[in-house]
Length: 142
Image (cartoon, rainbow, N blue to C red; front, side, top):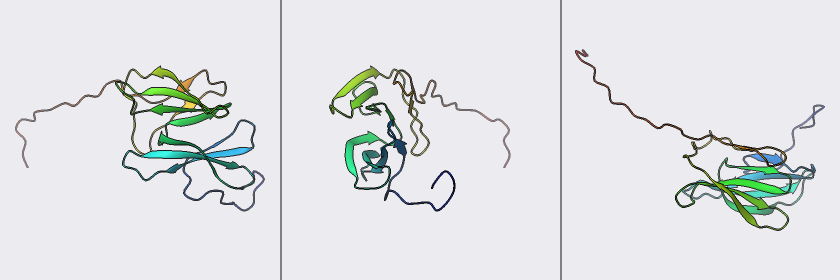
């Protein structure tokens, strides 16, 4: 929809999350791969409309962001710990940035992942304490 108002224009079919490229020329968006592990594909298309192009396949839903010429994502399936990774959109090379020490907080549809414009900071939710308590209630009456 134009910022000045007007009619909304559909840009994608079955697109979920969207991010605009730094230069404003591309719209990147996720599309479910219909797999049991909730993986998505990241595609791009010209902002003004046009054909879709596959950028990257196999990102966990909601755990990706764009910054500069990079797609940042968290690999929740990495051995031992989840990892933070950077995919260079030009060279198509993946670099592992860091291991994630604690379990990321992941609920389908309720997760957030963000990267600063210069790629220096990444924000994501994590579980610091996962506790269950069993309580005894005495003299309970129904």
